Structure formats: C-alpha cells, structure tokens
Image (tube, rainbow, N blue to C red; front, side, top):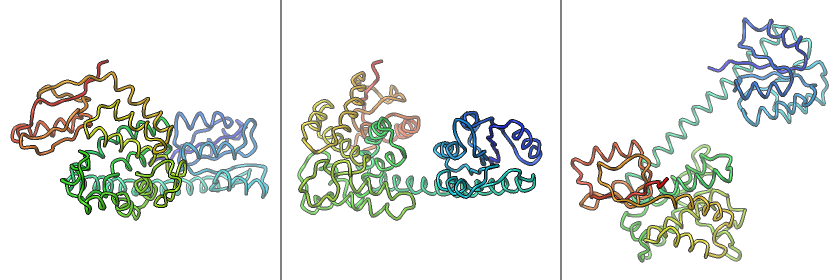
Length: 380
C-alpha cells in the first residue's frame, strides 16, 4: 500500500524540521520549492499525500497542487501555510481540491494526524477505484465473450476495427483511450439479436430481408441500452449509439447531433466501421479508402486525414501464403481462418498473438484447418 508523503516548501529549515518530526511515523520526502516538488512527483510518485506551502516563488501552492492533480488526481492534497486567510483557504479548496488547510506553526501531533487522515482517504479512494475498475473490466470481458460465442462474425468485426480506432484516437490524444477501445470492441454488441447468416449477408453486401434490415439498423441503440446502466460506461454507450451518425447531417431528423457535436470517438468508429465493411466486400484498401473520401459530408475530414496517414504505413506490408507451421506472432490475417468444413475460427484483420497461435495449434490436430493461410507480413 502506498503511504508516501511529500512536503513542498521554499524554506529548507521548515522542511528539515518536518522531516525530523515525522521520520519515525511516515515515509516522508521533502522538496525545496514547487519545481523540485513536481520533479519529485514525476520521479518518485504517486504520493498518497502532498502537503504544500501556500506562498512560494515562481508558483504558489494552489497552482502547484493543481498541476499535481492533473497527473495524479487520487493524491490527497493539503496546504500548510503561515499566511492563513479566508480568501486563500477558499481558493485552495476550490482550485486545488485541497483536503486540509493547516496553519504554521503546526504541532507535530496535529500534523501527523492530518497526514494519517489523508493517507486513509487515499486508501479509500484508490481501493474503491480498483474495485470499480476490476468490476468494469470483468463486465467488458464478459460481454465480449458473449459476443464471441453468440455471434462470431460480429466479434470478428469488432476485433478487426479495434486496432485502427485505437491508433487514430491516440494521434488525436483522446484523454480516455480505454473508452475508444471498449466502444470498438462492443460496437457490435447490439448484433446479438441478428443471426450469423444475416451478418454474413451484411458483410458481403447482399440484400437483407425486411426484418433483418430493421434489426440491423437498431443495433447501435440496442448496444446503448445494454451498456448504459453499467457504471462508468455511460460515455461508451453514447459512442456506440452514435457510431452510424453522419458528420454533416443537416436536415436529417433521425439524428440529434451533427458535426463536432458527435463524440470524436463515434466519428472515428463511423469511418473505421465503413472502411471495414468495404474491405469485407472484397475491395482493396486503397479503393475502400477512396470511397470514404468520396462520401461528401459523411465523415469528419480530420478523422479521414489521420486514418489515411495510418493506412499509409501498411504499404510496407506484403501478402504471403503460409502453412500453420509457418504462422508467426505479429503477422496480420489477410483472410479468415476456417476449418475445411467452413467453420470460422479467427476472422481476418487480427494480429497473430501468442494466445491466438496457441489456440490454433491446439485446434490444428482435430479441426483440419484450411491451408494455406493468407497473411500480411511486414516488408521492413
């Protein structure tokens, strides 16, 4: 458990006194001034508690703690100052989200108790966060497993698009990248209401029956409904709901957002999903992307620009046909891997990993995998 405490002050005598007072009680680090404090946070953080002086040269304690909060929001922040006034206290609490406001001189017992309370608060926040993250991760894994079992065609599509979505979002410096990756993985969760046969028709560009078409058009809303009640998944649910939204939707009544009102992650998802659909119909990458660019107003032009840059790096890949024994980690599947009876094992577009390779090797003896296997191999 992290019990580390950092004190930042511009007076070395004050810092040395605090270290002597608390060295037998807390794991204490001192920093002479805010810049040294930020350096300590970068090199030795995160800290459970950071206590800062209020009045320091170059940067006051409030600004210092705001910067700490940006990098480590769970760290409990306190002010220890000899310049106590109501205005400063209010500003510290509002802008730096300060947990305690202490005045100098502060008795050793009072200071130690305040730090201990801060550590307990840090433990509470981080333990609840860890529990929530584990629960959330479990829910996501369960949903993707259900999709893989119930509808492997839909799961294969979601797995293919995840890589592109993640790379585009990274270039845009999307703050919560996990939301983009999760939305990509679960973008097809609403397709659980569709049969594999219907999805095969969709991906091959074949005509759907009226009931199949209606069900497919509703899958983003179904996905949103499935996810919206899971804690911390509200934004992912909104992304999935908007995955088919047209960028320039002026005059379209069925769409309540347009342009940059649409979440960036949904705009990315729209472009990548449509690109994957075109590839599924047999179009080469270059022609598939040209069709995206020809779709005036359908896609965010900035997203297409970044997507084109990412696709450009794939020009270094060449296609090869390999046997099961020649399949290697980091190869990209150029076509589905199926049994000789036509059963889908791994869908095209996925990067071969140790897990996938192990799975295929375990199946090779009794599933009669169809060979050769077409893959993309880096030409570098």
